[in-house]
Image (cartoon, rainbow, N blue to C red):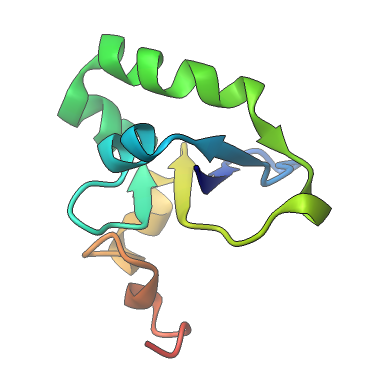
Length: 99
């Protein structure tokens, strides 16, 4: 299982973290990516596969004190605001990670 933090455009966003199977994670974050925009994911796999992939995640929310690592970040409603900061869809794109 891998942990995905979801960040959405809401002012009261909770930045929840969800457990994903290795298969779900690989589908959401292909080719070593650790950043994804839900709009890009849907464009890539289609609405049906996206729904089948993301739906089960919502039942596997992890309490933040129990989280051991975050393996990917999934942005909702923030593609226009954030995509330019992550051209390779990797955390290291932001220049702050030290990688």
